[in-house]
Image 1 (cartoon, rainbow, N blue to C red):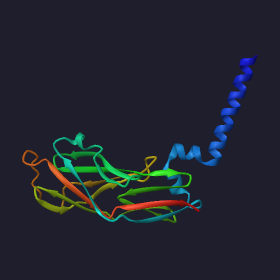
Image 2: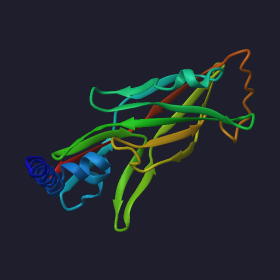
Image 3: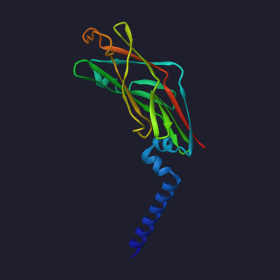
Image 4: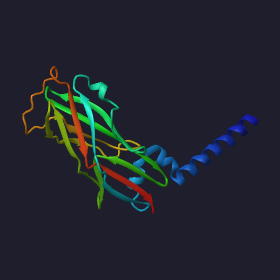
Length: 194
């Protein structure tokens, strides 16, 4: 009989704690992350602005896996690092970056390659990044290959084609397997509780 009473008290206690966490917002924030704050137009105000500086990372085209985790940007709270490098076919090399920020019930910050601007219908992604790659001493503009919303608890992802489609580049991995990618005009998003 005492065991049954103990389990009733335990279930009621756990249920009460879960209810309090849900009402306070902690449980939703813990499950869904930064998107909870980004979507709460009534509860948080957003300040978005470009980050000064140019940030670079060297990509090894002969060993895609070795690039994962290489840091492009780190201010101590927000980070952008290489998520994945791959090639589609024989010539469409891509790099995807992952942003990682901070969040709590007081607000959130994340630096990314996209401006997540609010519109009447939700959010839109605006690409402001200036992206330049240098391969075998030749520098050229590279173009976005895609981006995500806040699909991760602490950020998003965005990618670039490593070689432009509008310019002929002789890719010879045997001769030089490294390409340097420089990004500027990254975007800081700072949400504060109203």
